[in-house]
Length: 79
Image 1: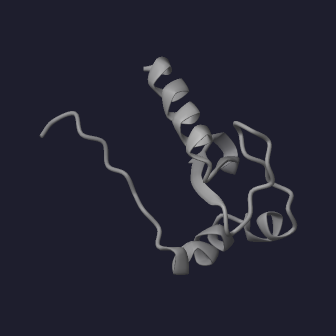
Image 2 (image 1 turned 90 degrees about the vertical axis):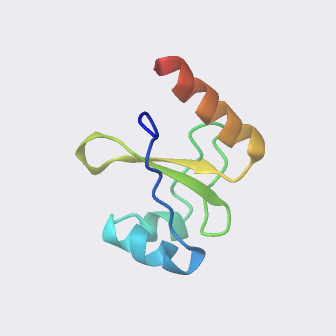
């Protein structure tokens, strides 16, 4: 099965711990993070993807199927 990507998943009950470990929990709870695709405020209830960038910077994608599809499409174009 070469060529398969490993996709880490986080259970909803572990989301706060993960966000706290990357110093993003407070920002999410304050409504300071926006979806990279639609600019909607990302919350604990609607967060779908966390994309690590350089220097401990993260992009977030909301749970809108349109946003997830758009992010995946753009990501495929970069390959």
